[in-house]
Image 1 (tube, rainbow, N blue to C red):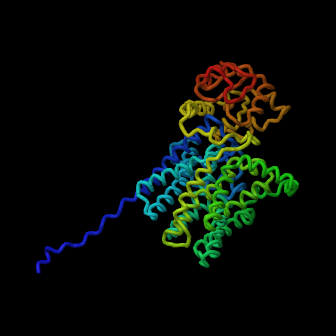
Image 2: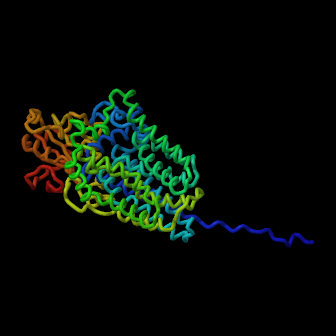
Image 3: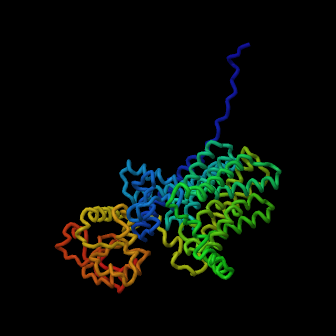
Length: 532
């Protein structure tokens, strides 16, 4: 027999999976968009004190996490137990970026990671649902971008905090567990624990709720998830209870938010009712996805679909009802970030069911739920109770604004200020300006700390500030009290200098300044000085 005519069977080529490419594209796009948003936060809207603080930690930080001199000389470990922050601080010493650029890159990458994890989950889910590859890629791309552009993420871009990485790492941990990639899950979980003392607790709430729901519906124990949950609780106990034993300067901010002074005086029904009313009007981007998750679970009788909402509900109830600090209970700044865990949960749940773990439950409808919670996360505020916390999307710029394009002018002035600060005499600056170079100032330079009638006002020679959206009443009050005769600004930027120093006393700085004409009674506002 002539065996040369017998052809070997040819295995079909596996279909191209665009998920890795889409995931990488989402990471790059989300990182870039949020990098731009952070630069605009610095240069257009004005940075807050937390941004100043974290920028000084991320740039030229050390193993002790020593706060920048513009804050104090203590360790950030005294506020939060965050070993993760050591890494960007040390790496920055070997890179050519300045403080603003490095902080924008790191925060952008944090947003990009969270968005990319959801894109990867949606891509993997659509592939297992036998959806056409490029249709699945489009869904993954849209889902990833929605994850970084919704109102929750926009709030975290407007007041950038590293906590935005926590939901991404929690979702990455559960995604890896769903796909039985336990080493990858362990890596994501270890990074998560290093991020903040309560990060593991958020993961534990999700995992314990999921373990309980699976046992209730299937009588199946998810042992790996239970181990991760226990580790998260143990680490949180260490961070809150035992870290103070090793860190004598630990301040316990988070505990103080709940206890208050006098203790628990804010735990009254009338106070709680007022806070819940604010939540109803201000936080539709949180309760909208939450209600959608509960409604889907009720209609489809699918307990698992509600787990994301169940896991974050204790955080929002405790934060809104039981804390005493306005920015916390109003869910301003970064305090809304756990909502992203809930928003990304449906796709991960789908992979638990159609992936190698083969949990019981319908899967195809979860794509619709995923789309719904992403869409509802774009809901705006329904009231104006707290205008101070601004409309979310209207106060975020993802493009390169005019002010961001003038970043080299800002850098040149800040470098000159570092070298020739003595030309300005006794200087006070606002937080928004100090945040541009947090290691070049000390806390005594803060104009924001000055109270009306403070005798230090009479000794001030120069006020330097960035016109933004924070702290203007203090700047205006001090400026009016000092009655400084000369007004300058750095062209194409929002930096303003009011001084009594004559031009011949400041030759080096004057080369970078132009006279500014004040067009309104106020000295500080977003559009106050003419000749721009």
